[in-house]
Image (tube, rainbow, N blue to C red):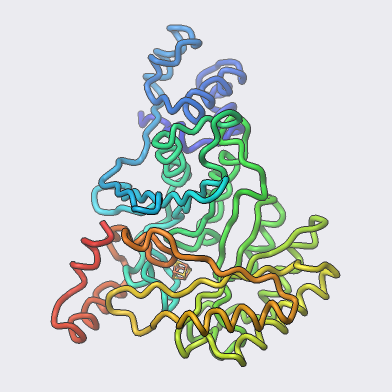
Length: 385
Ligand code: SF4
């Protein structure tokens, strides 16, 4: 009989496993959860407050299988990246970014991504599969262990953003379960607002998320009108901006004072012109007005991080500043997210694991790159690793 990986279970699932499968009291599940997520113990024999008989039973029926670290790399600015093996042929990346008073882990939800945003490094690798709950929360486990994080006491990991490889809302159940462990006191004890899910705009799933979870929402907008957005984020053809903004309104309305962050990657000459800033400001003001709340919409400007083979360039510093000023002048709360970990390819949009691509995208990208440079993408993959 296959062993149950306990990392796949949130508190409710773990309690059910203990009661229904092991015939044990539910509180035993809580003890085990603490051993796994607070103390980073995976060997049942080291869980010393469990009786010998229970430990033997667990040994027989269960396991705590964490992702294998294939490679890890610290950056000079404190950023730390892991390449984690998910099975024989796939690996994903997770990145920890320390900042003043906070430590944010960027977590992946899929091996590659099925969407095909034109400016995204992950997209060039195609798509293989969804990550399991264990593989998602396993990224948090690996980082927390490395950091010596102790929830409620020595909290080094203070925020999680589901912004790594993949569209999290296309892997709904596993992502929601993993986020529940992140927020559970017996898990990583993070407040709802410290767990952020970033979506390219899966409108029906935003509504579904609103029914089951209270996490913060970020939306990868990247363009202020449908024509440009459909080109940059093809999902926009299915769920255009008006529908997306309406879904954001519904999500934010559930909780008083809720704001939504809109991510906007600035690309030279593509979406960084004064007219784009004016259109974006208008869209954001409309959102504030609809919510009857100042700063209901927040904008995160992300200077594009070029990667080998991309046709896009980073906006100039002058244009970035002018874009931000235009939004601030229109009373839109706007930050410029400074890229971190550039030296390890860990900056936003640069996450790139190893994807046994089931689409044709990786091959097509490699062909295009070969035509451009006379060499394939192997160098880029190696650099990411
Ligand atoms: S930007 Fe996000 S949703 Fe778009 S292709 Fe990249 S990983 Fe997928």
